[in-house]
Image (cartoon, rainbow over the protein chains, first blue to last red):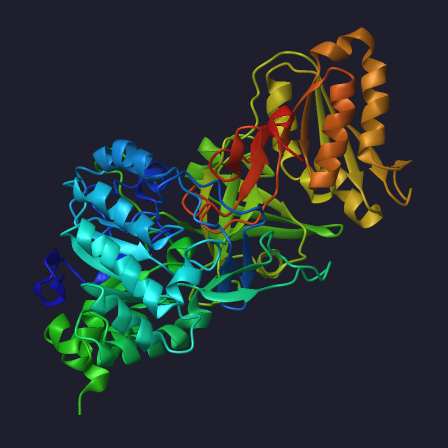
Length: 309
Length: 263
């Protein structure tokens, strides 16, 4: 990868600053279908698999998806096969992946984060752990936990005590003051903040005029939420001293450029991968061109540019 | 895992080579040699207009209606953003197309094949009928529509034994396709037990035809229509409930044994 794009997230060296958002890119599923050798030529600078929980979860009643104006509402509900299957079956298949792996975990109670993190601490393949305390589609834990600064800090502390891995806490935008949650996570021992998870919303079926999703409400993603994400990145990166992973509607290289300038150290691509699963392979190259055009010689120089006098 | 050296663009840019109305529906053909060569009946494509437009945001799943040399054809009912966008496209317009995706119908077996389509659910049955007939299966195709404007699609089933019903009685028998099916199964007599039903349409129609088939000892494969985001098994968004739990329509379907579906 080109020198100008090389960057780092804490101890993780990255070839460029674009990674995937959890739950939007499944390497083990996609490789065959996309007829591309993704394991060898992985388009993202790090891989974040879908969130796992202590116990398997079936997920929410369908329908789980509804497209809105420049956005996507989902209510998947953290469907996953549980952390044991992740460790025993998925991680060995990811051994040859040439980029860092960031495991994403969620729980119903704050101490679940400690239990999951402890199990992952044994796994050499796991380079970092992201605490998903911001899913809007589960009844217990998730966003309910991540809306409360005390519980945010507590969940982070449990995880911090259980692992020495680089620890990321992913926050919800569905709060009055997102910076107070970022502070709580950092006080609890977080090495990094990622923002934003999806924006709580709903849609009606246009003909029936009844909720379009089986779970009634869902999380909004896609270009529609980019300004919400940009603000969160800007506010948090000004408030805390740890790096920020920016996500929420980034679809183009210009979006990546702006998220970095707003203060993100790394940008995650989510819904845009559904439009084009190999988008990330182009984004890094396009970002390099945009940086050259504007005279940025390194990613470090670009990060937080919007804050500078 | 993909073999080394197979890396290529996930979505192929495909041009519309033909687009014409078929009553209320629209038949659109893409030039897509590789997809045409590999497509099986009941598989689908993810289709989105090339370019940066954010509306529609995501590709739409569209079942493969037919395949002819290097052309892949879809038959669509332009009612939502994605289908309207494709229906409005002119010859030469470029779309990003991924496919063929999904499992498709299981064509093994040798008994009489009863095909049942509800509305735009008729779309994948033309290619299916031809492939079954090529395998020497006896094929009867039952198509139910709301009205004449939709029923014109029956013309796309040339050389197939087609029976049509419409809800308003404007074409064929008045009523639902499940009623056509009852009569058809009765006509098979004792041979019905070797018969197999292949169906595509709205959930209510699939429930009705597979229930009718079950009563007569006829097993069914049904193709479900769900909202999808990725089309490749990643997002878990398109699940349907089966006796084994939720299953993804994109990567584990869209064709399921009716006996496995919980509805």
